[in-house]
Image 1: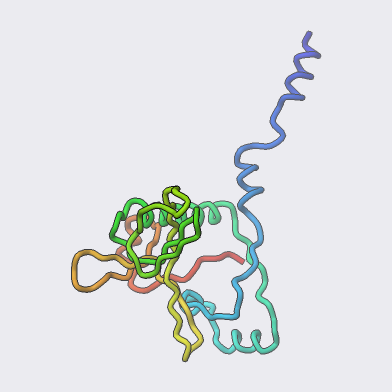
Image 2 (image 1 turned 90 degrees about the vertical axis):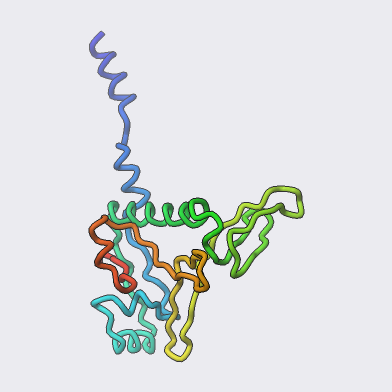
Length: 181
């Protein structure tokens, strides 16, 4: 009977591990961001060189894909999910932004999280979109993570970051994107 047990064990053994599945789905090369517009986060990178950017643009040289390891891809994904949860749910009516209904396609601009019903009678499901700000004279753009109405005459522009608690005290300007090449 032991040969039969061994066959059953071998044929039912998983072909992969859970971490192996995550690695297959998250880690890998990602295309570099399109260079048709210079982003504020590009300028803050230690490696940013305006001359190199311009020469590569003029010569139509595309940036190399960048390898994103599993742990970093997981961190990015968690950060994006928490930011969306924070803005769309936890912040209630405090965030002002652009909102798109995933059911009917309605779009609200410069609005607090809307409510209501679609024309079809279904409840709106609103997805938040960041504001994109462009400085056309410099050909630079950036997006604002969230604008808060905290009950004062001025709104508060906010950059959302998922960081270790001790790292928050060091933030003074938008942080560059961390990518591994």
